[in-house]
Length: 262
Image 1: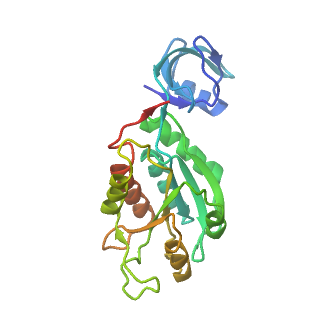
Image 2: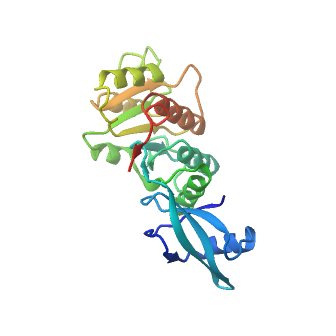
Image 3: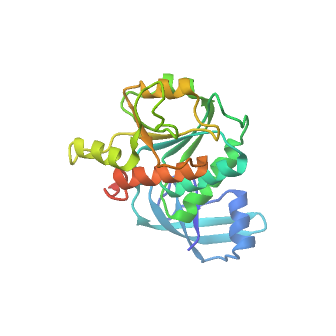
């Protein structure tokens, strides 16, 4: 069944108008007619069954009938990704949405080699991915800021999984290799109270050129940072993001612990 994200409050019997591009998709592409059913979600009120109430040359209206799934609270997980080439960044946003990231934060680092992006387009990609993957919310794509500024404003209760592709270098000035990601995350989960909710987390992926030595040293010195290795091979940013989110979800996320009702 067709699913659409419509950011408006839901109530049984309410008639709502989708955005013009959504109306064109429903009527011109999917050829829906009055009475045809679809699913809607708004990130707050769960998923609802709706029907096409009326169609016209100007668009259409939709009537909300009943809730089919209650709202669920996803893990509080940010993906922080340094700007990379447009096609790879779009893939990262799509896959991060599919893998359950709650927010996608864009940053620039000392070795960032992409100096511009289009957050509105990335937000549209996240919305489409959320519609297709069955999730009940859409991650927010936050415009770029400098990594230093992000770290300076870091919330004290959020942990950071720092994916350091050079973490196994024995000559590194911080002295010591990064732990393997999955065992490190599982150990942190086991060390916490068994039934306690998982604290907010973020996953940090660097640019294609990697982090500068001073950035690595700064990050490893922070008390809220868990440096990890993603394996023996150097991964491209899009592959690293997918791998890191998969490992986090397996150890701490909703793959094993289940979603909490909203």
